Image (cartoon, rainbow, N blue to C red; front, side, top):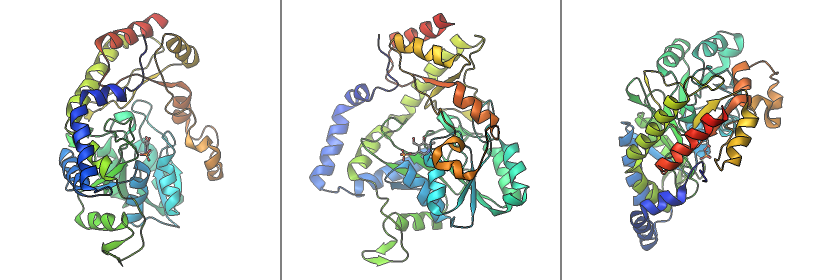
Length: 370
Ligand SMILES: Cc1ncc(COP(=O)(O)O)c(C=O)c1O
């Protein structure tokens, strides 16, 4: 049996008539860039997170860059994030001209460690920190109550990287309600994925929303009137149409992910050497990935591959070890939890299209390896 990490074909077939009609509609209307399909999606996506605004953009990377730019981050500033992420989080900081600074993750949630954040903000280097970029990694929301207490104390802004955490919640509040803005990726394999590149920013700040709408369209306030210079971060009409259809299924698909995760956890809990994902009582984890931690990762991965079960490593090299970021001058040992996770974490299939047979097959093979 083969079990892929995602099954976008099966997902498409399950909603084909609606998707085809929505795409056809964009083609008929020739609203290929922004347009009604995108603005309708923006309204629904903001509503889904109980936020006031959504600004649809071209990718998650665009969303992060635009959000940092819009809150005034630039040369001479520093922005704190964690090195255990996809590089786009850190690139967005670099693109503004600001300096990325790292703090380590918590060993349980793999997200920003609030104590490490405070330790950094207390130092002289911490004085240049204008914003932080906590990452709701794998669908697990960051402990935002603790993070907010610290950012309020030090006068630092928050932009949430929610690329992997559509409709995740912490303390009963949706992601996107803890800082200035939250940034999403709608890369095809995400919990809510487009049929190409797409991203979005949500915010409750009216002024910021206006600024972001202009920034995404070359700083235009009206046609050919440029209040400031921006960029082209616009979303395609077809992506808005696809996302609008798929958003209607997001609650259902998220429940399916959570059900599979609960089954896995029940079956794997207690296997020594296998750390299952932690979900704090305050968190509503949306399981973009189901990530196990094991000291036998290479053998475990090979075993599952031989059985036809796809796996992935998110992420095998922490950003401070990437050639692109060696100039930050961090050393091995600076972020021990991130470094250990990069060696021990492995993602196994968790997606709403999994059949009961596939779920049972993954469970029995993981158990038989151990
Ligand atoms: C944590 C995180 N941030 C940012 C991004 C960038 O999103 P995109 O690929 O849509 O530009 C990703 C994409 O995988 C991500 O996982």
